Length: 133
Image (cartoon, rainbow, N blue to C red; front, side, top):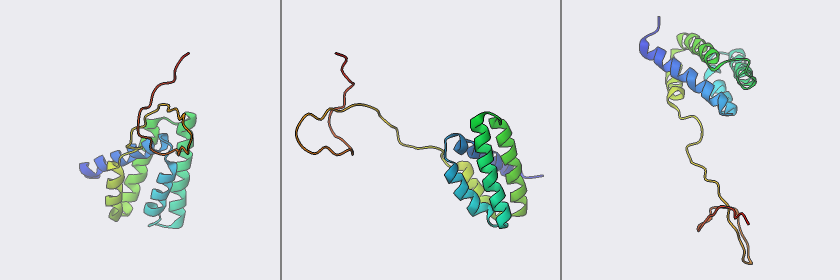
């Protein structure tokens, strides 16, 4: 039986794996899985990368629920952590990582009516809503 702190770490990591999948950040998970699960053997690493791709597709298509995916990844982490306790810091980092972008996105319009070059970068000045004439 695992210690309650380890169970909490595994639960958080499994939840974040699902959150990464649902936010379309599968590439981030693939890279993480290759690095962490590659400590075992190449076959284990490839199997986990395939599991990420399968589960991501299943979540997207609605053939797997979030809870089913979390249970699956909790079991994967529990098994791997018992075989490779040295990966605990990496799994802890996954459990505490922020999923998704941290910057807010603002949508608006800007009219450039003068002659000159207008570059699509940060614009300073007034941004207004489109007029309804």
